[in-house]
Image (cartoon, rainbow, N blue to C red; front, side, top):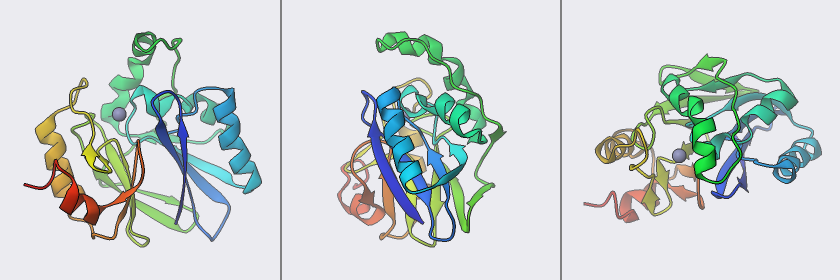
Length: 213
Ligand SMILES: [Zn+2]
């Protein structure tokens, strides 16, 4: 599996496109593109690679991760999957946006709810889902065991962890999620976070100040 990353919007959020070498199918995760310019960056990549988006996924539905949800749905007409516990965040978008000086906007609601027992398949790639609450109540990570890669959303960052002071956040739940779900993965697993540079499970296991104790 190949992971392509883009950094969008005033929160410097990482948007990911997943591909493999078997077909032109791709999956879009957390499209943060918040304006025409950013939408064009994503569209140019998809067209240049001749990709065919087949699925829209959200790791969680905080405002910075969902700016482009409606545009992706309208443009590619593909299903949108997220965890059921994130619905409240989608409902609150029109209220949160003005707090950041952003005009109110809406996201579509998921076509299907996904949880830990589910798997995601595109082309010849299958992802498993880890339920990792603590940053948000319905945070999930998408793990590809064969290539040792995980899309971690805002759960784990390079040298840090996600915020736990936002509504629905909880420090102890977040640490528990990281230790019982993410740190059980092999050290060589590459972690693609919702913000900042990629890292590895091994690097965070031995260096992350929130995890060494
Ligand atoms: Zn978040």
